[in-house]
Every structure is written in C-alpha cells, then in structure tokens.
Image (cartoon, rainbow over the protein chains, first blue to last red):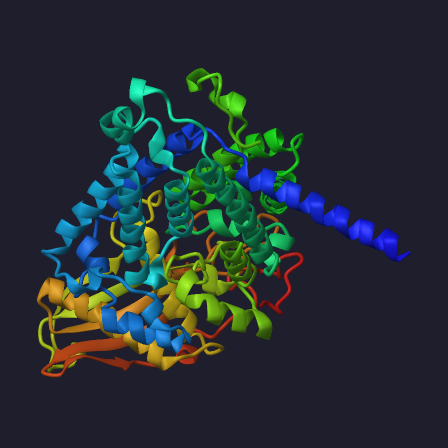
Length: 323
Length: 216
C-alpha cells in the first residue's frame, strides 16, 4: 500500500512538474508579443488622447476632486491612500498638459518598440498615474491595459517589429538574423493568458451577485439609460414579448460566455470557438455600454491565445510560439 | 507564482469578501493596488438594475456672490455635467460615475454626509472657479430607466419619451459657496425628503419578473 501511494505521489509530482515547465518555460517566438505590443500601444495612445478632453478638470491639482478630497474619500471607504500614488495632483491646469503629452510620447515609443522595457514601464506608470489620481472614476479599461503593457515588457516584445531591433539588433546579432525564440516571450504571453482567464471569471462571478443578470434584464437596464447609452435600443420595448426574449438571450449569452471563457479557453478544441464568439459578445457589449476601448482591450488580450498558424504570413518558419 | 496568487485572490474578492479574503486583500494591497491589479472600484457588472445604477448627472446653478443666499441674487448660469462629449470613449462616463457615487451615499440606506459633502464641495469649488462665481446650488439628478419590455409603465411616465422630466429625480441638493476659508457646503434636505427610496423601479407599473428586492 505504502509503495503504491509513494508511486502515485511521485508520478503526480513528476507529471505536474513536466506540465509546469512545458507551460511556462517552452521558448517561444517574440513575434506574437511584438504584434500585441503594437496593438496595445496604439490602444494606450487612443486612451490617453481620449483623456485630453477635460484633462485639467479631472486630473490637475484643482480638479473636480482635489487630491485631498480623493484621500478623504478613500479613507472613508477604508482604503489606504498611500497605495494610490499619482504625480498628476501636483500640476496646475496649465502645466498638466506637458506631462500628459509626455505620457502619450512614452506610449508612442512603446508602440514603436523604442527602448521597449523602459518605454513600457513608463507607459504603465503613466496609465497608473491617471487611475490613482481619481480612482473613484477609473474606467473598466485601465486594469486590463496596465497588465497588458507590463506583461508585454516581460515578454521581450521589443525583440521583433521594433525600432530597438532596427537600431540595436544588428550589433547584437551579426548578420542581422532574427532573434531566436525566448523563454521570456512565452512567460509574458502565459501571464496574459492566465490573468485574462481569471479576469473573465471575476467579471462573470461579479455579475452573478445581481438579479438583473439572472432574470435576463441587465442589458435592458443598460440600453435604457438615456444619458449614457451609445446606441438607442429602446425600440425593443415596442416589441413586447419578443423584445423581452431577445434582451434575455443577449443578457444570458454574455454571462454564459464569460463563465465559459475562463475554463474552455484552455481546451484546444473549444479555444477557436471561444475566440470567435468573443468578437460577437464584445461587439454586443460595446454597443450596449459604450465601453469601446475596454472591449478592444479584452479582444486584444484574447489574441494571446491565438495559435501560431495565425501569424504564419509574417513568421519565420523555424520559430514557434506557445500552444 | 506569488504574483498570480495575489492577482487571483484580489480578483476573486472583487465584489464581496469573506473575512479571510479581506485580510489577504489588505496584505496584498501595497502590490495589487499600486499596480491596479485590484479593480475593486470598478463595477464589472455594469448594472444590477437597481435605481442606484441608473444614470445621474450634476446640475449646478451658479450665482455671483458667495456671501449672499442664492434666493437673493440672480442666476448667472446653469452648468450640467457632463455637457457634450462622447459615450464611446469614457469622457462622459467619468461624470456619471462621480454623480452615481454621490447619489449612492445620499441614499438613506447608505447615507454618508462626509462623502456627499466632500464630493459636493470639491465639484462645486471647481465649477465656481471656472466661471468666477461665488455660490452654487449643486444637484444630482437621476434619470430613471424605463422598465423591461413586458413590464407596464407606472402612471405619469410617458412611453414614447424616456427623457421626459417625469423620469428625473433630484437625489441630492446642496448650497456650495466660497469664503475666506475655502469652499463650504450645506445640504438642503435629506435624501429621504428629496426622493423616497424605491425598492423596485419607480417607473414600473408592476415588479419586473424575477425581481428580488434582497440585493447585495
């Protein structure tokens, strides 16, 4: 009996160890991370540019919520303000645009792959500064955008399709050869995958706390908000029962998709279906909520699950990516 | 491994927490909050269909002199927040989020005058500075949504005009003025007097199917 159980545990330990090493430490082509870097960098630029309107009114020293007011509100909510550091509260309305343009410049450098580790870290720091300046009005996008930028720094995403490679690559690699596969590229993409799966689980579980997502009316309450809806779907009310059934289907589809994603995305047969369905689900959520950049960020993060064949047109034949 | 454990714990504790989760989130906070891995302020449920999830906006009536009551001087102008902007890029959403936050804490069930006063003072001071005014009457006006398609509307709510004034409710109202000590705020009346809280939608003729008033 003892011998049998010893054998079982040693087999399990060995199998888990092999699986763990294969999952995290199989070298991968940085191309996928490089393509993601460009897309995520562009998204960061669009996000930062979208903050330009009412910049001083939201983020300067004399903003709608002053730094002192933010601290008091955080303290009232039981949070420690020290974990919400932001340099933006030191700037006046007139000065803040300079640091704002510096943040956009950092995001542009990250997109182009110019000193990628540094520009990536600066982009993440800039994004965090806006979140921490007024966490009470931080959007859905920022938590996703920040982890994407950070993990793409880890993923050595500047090794391909970058100014880094154009300016410094040939010196490091005689003959101008493409960079070889790297463990860092795999680790970065795996971090995005695992974090994203947990994020989907969080979004689904959070929805299950409320009745509107159970009784199928949540989407109605979103599209019926006359101030904030981006598209007017209130004509569905005129459809009566048919409209109600459509709203129910739309609501349930979103919850079921988010619940399923966290699990089924790891199955190689279900993965293409989950990625394709994601396009429909996020398109429908974007028109219901108006969270365009958030929807794009979630789709971009999902691209970390795309198979290597997807990148065949731009891939060198000898390189591989995580599966 | 440790990083993913921290992220997993804070994401699993995003909306409601056990005592254990609360302790872990507190321990991880210097890391997870600083890097925004913990999106606890962000409602990823978008709506639960509660009145507090409906749109709310700021309306500020501005007056020239801080030392005189609003009733005794002419209205300079009225500012609505948000004014303009796009519903696709988040610029209007920030105003809705702040107005909803104030409305939430003006609600008798969650009433917290410290929070509502702090927001009203800070918002009022900024808008008064922008327009060189000395006094403002700040209101948070909530726009109730129509009930779902199969639920009839309550009397007085027009079917074809979901932006009619009947759908608007003043949730919070306060005087804000500037003096030598800075911005001061005085709430005009309690939320209970301004807008009695409804367990179900105010606009519904009957309760929506499956509606359970015992919300988290």
